[in-house]
Length: 290
Length: 318
Image (cartoon, rainbow over all chains, first blue to last red; front, top):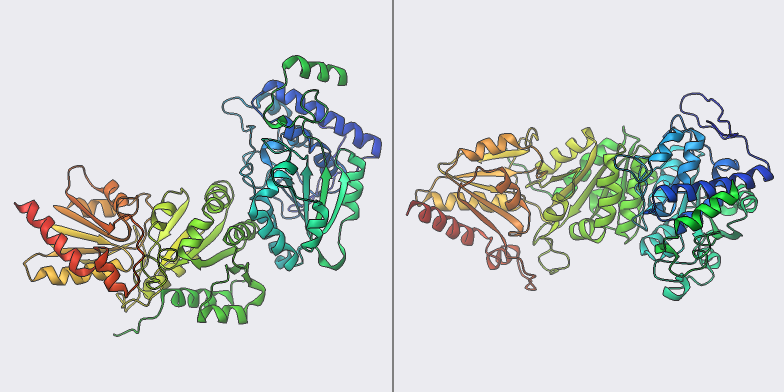
């Protein structure tokens, strides 16, 4: 069943923008995606739940908030905006969204984690809607930079978004890409940091601190802002307002989020990445939202 | 016909430069590594010449992104850096990703073996064949002269996918004055020989030909094959050809017994066929000097190889 998000039929090679939802619908969609992610976890408890819950509102704002141009019928349509989800293991909340939009049938969600399913623990482009190989960290932003440069060279006005975790920014390859992007004025590139503050073994700040991340990105020549990453309306507004930066600077949105958001025992836990909440806890949450 | 030797990279880049005028989808990306011909690309196609700086990880990632946007990409750096500094970027964003999405990226690594004779072990390169051959979806080319390098450039302009081209940093005597045609399994038979065949690649093909001349005086008629394509995929013709010999010798300017040319050839041979694998003993060497001296010290120079080939053939007879 298609959701209330209709995707306009478009000419070959063009990509549609779903009609943006109003604020209340957007918030409801974010709750829905959060609950759907819990349901996925119940089906496949091996998947990374905590890091998939922090970027829920980011994905909802992108796909339902009119921020991303896409065509589920033609995932690689030239006219699409590109979204690279570099923290692939922490993006399983995107599965229900992609199914909802028609990238693949809803029934496929029931196969998550099962032998033969294309919905595994770390999505690659075998999942319709994913652009690149993900999950090995520190790769997505550099590839996004190459795409943004390629789009500019082609004279395209399409944009590239890259969702990267805060702890993923420990990989030095990101900073090579960050320096290159500002040098080349890639204002068609938008880095979204899912700043959930927790790596695998504890708080990012205690491992290697990023200091004030937006200031640090600003010092590297980026137009960087910070937003409450769980306020889907604020995330959408921020992404909307950041279209076309001043001075050709690449854009960065630091979305302050919580790993394991909304799940007792998971949210706020320094080891949230590897904790597996019990079925009872999850079932209770799913029931409350029904 | 005599053809004056030039550096492989200049021959290769010249072919790319000539193609770029009519091929707006060809882009050239370097990690702050140059050559005289590269200056022409930089001057004539500034929009399609990108210097990422000394940042090989970003070099590969940017190339990947450009390839996903439909560009044919050539990436250029010193051999050990473009193959090993950024190996996981190559693995994830080229080898792996190209299994799922059409991509066209050629990695050009300059400085095979002891090429950078004075620079020592950081710049010398003995592991690249091993690590690049390990990756599925990556073609490996190892030219022995600049005419072959031109042929590889031509091939890369015609074909897609991911490739690594291993180039010597020094000009090599021309083996193919009339041009090199790269077809089939990507090898050239220089001498058919008798019972023993020596398979070499890159600069070692020149050593192999010297060795063949030298042992001919002892009545040993050595076959010599220059293997240009080391992709490790189906090389049935080469396998058939080699199975006709009584003995096979491999010769590479890379670590012996570490999965390079020797392993590739061993996999092609019928069981029981006697093989002698000659390469650089797997240890890092800090001597600097001229190339030929370094070769002899590492037991891969013409004198050392001729001696080992003679002994190998005599043992087999005895």
